[in-house]
Image 1: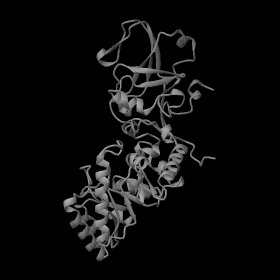
Image 2: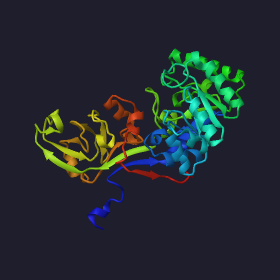
Image 3: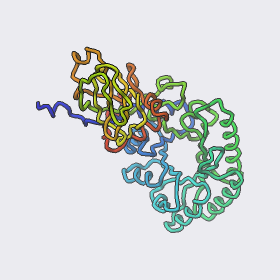
Image 4: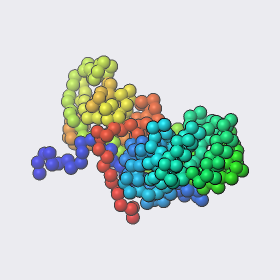
Length: 389
């Protein structure tokens, strides 16, 4: 075996455990019964890979898939996935006709209605529409003042055979803070909006408002369908509860091979700006991941585990690389080789390993962003692709 043949996996990789995806879907599905689960696979499944994750989620019992853009939904259809799919974020340039022809459900906040109807006329196929009410988040969705008119107009088009109002939905603003009163207020407004639609004659298949934090903390928000995003990737939406405490398993582990190791004297500056200087003779290791790969540039101090020990990133994270200080411990020199060793930035957190939450803390952000921003230069390697025994 040559030296280059010793490593059969990519030198950088995001390892995606599809058995963890399936476990999380089964866990969340059990929590929300009898409601059904929508696996939200937008943004390339939060960086995990949309097609493999969607297939794993459906195999584990998810009934729906959710995406932001019609283009994402079309990618699912092109991959041969025929499950119900909802797309909810549009512009006037969105391809509503292609969505209808592919049997994709469309979220509608108001202005989209004329585009949806035009597409239905063109392809002579009624649209399946979920009307969205803004209950307090202030982003997409009809305002309460315009809701009655939107429902009335949609029902008129339904009477003409151009669409079917099959759902009403909304989105929580602070479900990750279950104690806040705004959650109760949003739920009240949602119930009122549903009542308006049903009184107008809408025969709703699904009412949905709960995201991952709401499904875990607000059983009164489950209704017919729950949209699971972060939870299916095994991450906790709560500051005071870990994934393990919620019965979830993180699905992504980010790794790279150590590219360089060198001994340096006290006073050695590290990386751009020389913001870090060694206080004593030390050993530095170079990790070939940087902000071009999606690692936050400001996340100095983020943890990296090498040969079973976790070290902090020191100095600025650069475009393609970062440095960790292994310290002056003589065991580093006497232990396993450092160059070519696996460096784990985050993963399951088992055995005290680094987590996405720790990187989020170092970057002043949330775990959603840490996994979602890992870029395409980092290959996704899928493990446990078959059903778990």
